[in-house]
Amino acid sequence: MDLPSFILLWKVAAWSMGLAIAAYLLLTISGMYIFVQRQRSQPRPSWLRFLHLGTGIVMTMLVLLLLGIGIVGTLGHFGTLGHSWHLFAGLGVVSLVFLSVWSAVQISLMQPWARSLHIGTNFVLFVGFLWVSLTGWDVVQKYLP
Image (tube, rainbow, N blue to C red; front, side, top):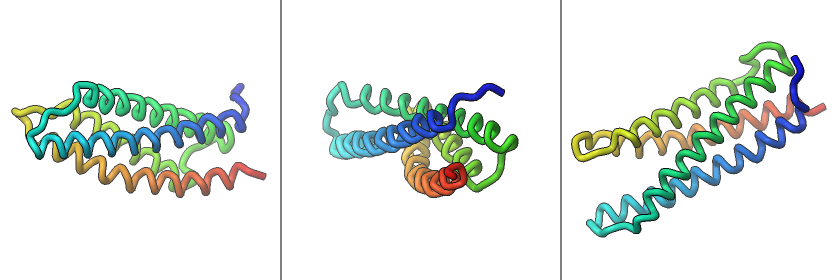
């Protein structure tokens, strides 16, 4: 299999992970602002919803990129998957991100449960990002000579 350089994959993964965490933090801040404005029954700026949705889409794409890099890099280096807890942490984060996206799309006056699911999922996603970061550090140490 003709794979890109592992150094290139690591650089792309490192930048993608950093940007995904930055996007998560921006989503947290904008989501908290939306929540506070909603609790106070105050109108929120029209751009805020688009910022929140756009950042969520970007974070989702970055997580998918990281999944692809992880699969390609692991298969290219080891020939099989499942050499560490990082696979399960990564799949957990991908699942949580998709649950968050799905629940966000469901939010409406007719489905009030979706907002709680979305917010709760994003709290758990914080733990997921911690877990995937810690296990990812172990994986990087395996690759380095």
